Length: 135
Image (tube, rainbow, N blue to C red):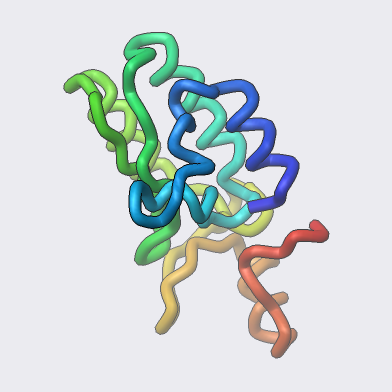
């Protein structure tokens, strides 16, 4: 995820992402948000919802796995886990590269959730990467 998106989330949800700058011995959050830029709005909305209902919840890892969002927390309530489950399910309907909700599929040897346009760019560009800093 773009540096400015990472910084926005940490700045606006400091309690949720308080582990962001701890060492790898303490948390997996130290690696930041290991997702494509297309899920920023989804993660932002989830962060807002979690912060409203459970300010003591802390994110320990936010990443993509098998084409879907994975959002791991500690000190969470059942309501928070329900929100996370809903967001993780929704991630399969959002292109993780560009954020489109049109013609999105999950496939590949290394599994991605992409819209038709991003799949085409991936197929035609040998240097294509899901996480581009300069987008």
